[in-house]
Length: 139
Image (cartoon, rainbow, N blue to C red; front, side, top):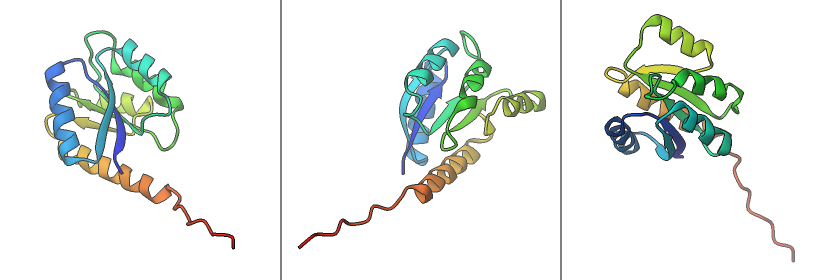
Protein backbone atom coordinates (compact mmCIF):
# COMPACT_ATOMS: atom_id res chain seq x y z
CA UNK A 1 0.00 0.00 0.00
CA UNK A 2 1.22 3.48 -0.84
CA UNK A 3 0.48 6.08 1.82
CA UNK A 4 -1.26 9.18 0.50
CA UNK A 5 1.08 11.82 1.91
CA UNK A 6 0.84 15.57 2.44
CA UNK A 7 4.07 17.57 2.87
CA UNK A 8 4.45 20.94 4.60
CA UNK A 9 7.80 22.43 3.59
CA UNK A 10 8.52 26.01 2.53
CA UNK A 11 11.86 25.51 0.77
CA UNK A 12 11.25 24.21 -2.79
CA UNK A 13 14.63 22.50 -3.05
CA UNK A 14 14.09 20.59 0.20
CA UNK A 15 10.49 19.78 -0.76
CA UNK A 16 11.61 18.39 -4.13
CA UNK A 17 14.39 16.34 -2.52
CA UNK A 18 12.07 14.90 0.13
CA UNK A 19 9.42 13.97 -2.44
CA UNK A 20 11.90 12.37 -4.82
CA UNK A 21 13.87 10.50 -2.17
CA UNK A 22 10.94 9.33 -0.09
CA UNK A 23 8.86 8.12 -3.03
CA UNK A 24 11.88 6.08 -4.12
CA UNK A 25 12.51 4.31 -0.80
CA UNK A 26 9.26 4.47 1.18
CA UNK A 27 5.70 3.41 0.38
CA UNK A 28 4.55 7.00 -0.24
CA UNK A 29 2.64 8.88 -2.90
CA UNK A 30 2.59 12.62 -2.33
CA UNK A 31 -0.91 13.97 -2.93
CA UNK A 32 -0.29 17.58 -1.92
CA UNK A 33 2.07 20.07 -0.39
CA UNK A 34 2.02 23.51 1.17
CA UNK A 35 4.69 26.10 1.88
CA UNK A 36 2.92 28.06 4.62
CA UNK A 37 0.87 27.35 7.73
CA UNK A 38 -2.27 28.92 6.23
CA UNK A 39 -2.00 26.94 2.98
CA UNK A 40 -1.39 23.70 4.91
CA UNK A 41 -4.35 24.26 7.20
CA UNK A 42 -6.58 25.05 4.21
CA UNK A 43 -5.46 21.92 2.35
CA UNK A 44 -6.06 19.74 5.41
CA UNK A 45 -9.57 21.19 5.88
CA UNK A 46 -10.41 20.70 2.19
CA UNK A 47 -8.94 17.21 1.85
CA UNK A 48 -9.44 15.96 5.43
CA UNK A 49 -10.09 12.34 4.36
CA UNK A 50 -7.62 12.17 1.47
CA UNK A 51 -4.36 11.56 3.31
CA UNK A 52 -2.81 8.92 5.54
CA UNK A 53 0.44 10.67 6.44
CA UNK A 54 1.38 14.32 6.91
CA UNK A 55 5.04 15.32 7.09
CA UNK A 56 5.40 18.76 8.65
CA UNK A 57 8.35 21.12 8.89
CA UNK A 58 8.15 23.41 11.91
CA UNK A 59 9.72 26.66 10.82
CA UNK A 60 8.04 28.03 7.72
CA UNK A 61 8.46 31.35 5.95
CA UNK A 62 4.84 32.16 6.86
CA UNK A 63 3.51 30.73 10.10
CA UNK A 64 4.74 27.53 11.68
CA UNK A 65 4.18 23.82 11.72
CA UNK A 66 2.88 24.07 15.29
CA UNK A 67 -0.43 25.47 13.99
CA UNK A 68 -0.60 22.65 11.47
CA UNK A 69 -0.10 20.11 14.27
CA UNK A 70 -2.94 21.73 16.24
CA UNK A 71 -5.27 21.35 13.26
CA UNK A 72 -4.30 17.68 12.91
CA UNK A 73 -5.33 16.78 16.44
CA UNK A 74 -8.83 15.79 15.27
CA UNK A 75 -7.59 13.37 12.62
CA UNK A 76 -8.67 9.77 12.15
CA UNK A 77 -6.63 7.02 13.85
CA UNK A 78 -5.45 5.85 10.41
CA UNK A 79 -3.86 9.26 9.76
CA UNK A 80 -0.38 9.87 11.14
CA UNK A 81 1.44 13.17 11.48
CA UNK A 82 5.20 13.40 11.78
CA UNK A 83 7.54 16.34 12.09
CA UNK A 84 10.65 16.54 9.90
CA UNK A 85 12.84 19.33 11.21
CA UNK A 86 16.39 20.55 11.64
CA UNK A 87 15.57 21.59 15.22
CA UNK A 88 15.25 18.36 17.22
CA UNK A 89 15.89 19.88 20.63
CA UNK A 90 14.14 18.04 23.47
CA UNK A 91 11.82 20.95 24.30
CA UNK A 92 10.71 21.21 20.66
CA UNK A 93 10.22 17.44 20.39
CA UNK A 94 8.18 17.42 23.61
CA UNK A 95 6.01 20.30 22.37
CA UNK A 96 5.35 18.54 19.05
CA UNK A 97 4.32 15.36 20.84
CA UNK A 98 2.04 17.34 23.15
CA UNK A 99 0.39 18.85 20.05
CA UNK A 100 -0.29 15.35 18.72
CA UNK A 101 2.66 14.52 16.47
CA UNK A 102 3.18 10.78 16.26
CA UNK A 103 6.94 11.15 15.90
CA UNK A 104 9.64 13.80 15.36
CA UNK A 105 12.50 13.20 12.94
CA UNK A 106 15.71 15.14 12.35
CA UNK A 107 16.20 16.06 8.68
CA UNK A 108 19.91 15.33 8.80
CA UNK A 109 20.05 12.20 10.93
CA UNK A 110 16.72 10.35 10.99
CA UNK A 111 15.72 9.66 7.38
CA UNK A 112 16.15 5.89 7.75
CA UNK A 113 13.91 6.01 10.84
CA UNK A 114 11.32 8.02 8.88
CA UNK A 115 11.34 5.41 6.11
CA UNK A 116 10.90 2.64 8.70
CA UNK A 117 7.99 4.57 10.27
CA UNK A 118 6.34 4.92 6.86
CA UNK A 119 6.73 1.22 6.11
CA UNK A 120 5.28 0.26 9.50
CA UNK A 121 2.32 2.62 9.02
CA UNK A 122 1.63 1.24 5.53
CA UNK A 123 1.85 -2.33 6.89
CA UNK A 124 -0.59 -1.51 9.69
CA UNK A 125 -3.09 -0.12 7.20
CA UNK A 126 -2.69 -3.18 4.98
CA UNK A 127 -3.69 -5.36 7.93
CA UNK A 128 -6.93 -3.43 8.62
CA UNK A 129 -8.16 -3.24 5.02
CA UNK A 130 -10.96 -5.81 4.78
CA UNK A 131 -10.45 -8.56 2.29
CA UNK A 132 -13.11 -8.59 -0.43
CA UNK A 133 -14.90 -11.90 -0.59
CA UNK A 134 -15.85 -13.18 -4.04
CA UNK A 135 -19.56 -12.86 -4.63
CA UNK A 136 -21.52 -16.02 -4.93
CA UNK A 137 -23.41 -16.70 -8.11
CA UNK A 138 -27.08 -17.62 -7.91
CA UNK A 139 -28.21 -20.46 -10.15
